[in-house]
Amino acid sequence: MKKFYIAIFLFFPVLLSAQTLEGSWKLTQRNGSPVQDTQAVRIYQDGYFSEAAKNTTNNEFLWVKGGEFQTGDYRELIDFDTREPALVGDTLDSKLSFVSADQIRINNGTEEEVWQRISNSVDDLSGNWVITGRQRNGEMNTMTPGDRRTIKILGGERFQWVAFNSATGEFFGSGAGTYTAKNGKYEEMIDTFSRDKNRVGARLEFHYEVKDGQWHHSGKSSKGEDMYEIWSPYAEAYAK
Image (cartoon, rainbow, N blue to C red; front, side):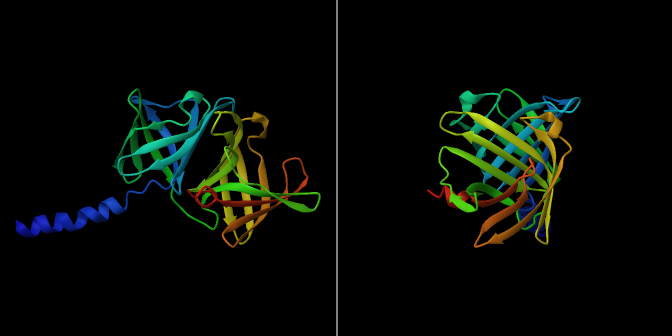
């Protein structure tokens, strides 16, 4: 009997170590009912999360929300929320528990959601990024991120970008979808876009290089114009 207890004790830390939030997740249930006609995808990466949703029947954009999070005693510090802008700046003490290694339950006190893991794969660009440079007329203009910023979070083969102001709660735009990053080629397919649902399904190709920890992103914009951007790790740009 003593040996049995030792075996359980040794196994338990291994089980906990496998329970990581990082990667992408899909909302499958809300308050015990299956989610229908809505695609909601959440990405957890580098201490930050972002969630984007659309109506699957017509590709209409529904919402985005996100911000910093902490594990253990799970909390969310909301940086943007298009459904409830008044929550921007608040810390939410939602209860998060693992149903299994690939399924989580989140209860915020008014509703309970179940999320299923899509992927936790990593690549060269996995991380949470904020834009810090953009080339105009052949010159690179440095951008210092503040309350108004554009982030791009990549994890579990999914990307989401969001432009917002964390001080005022203003929302300026968002896009999301799947991506691949390999051998200097970055490709994304849009499946959610706040500004124009007709962009859903578009596939864009770019070149990328990670130099000195920064993501150099170049190619043609959605308008066919030359572009060159530099994205920096969010945690470094906003180091306290």
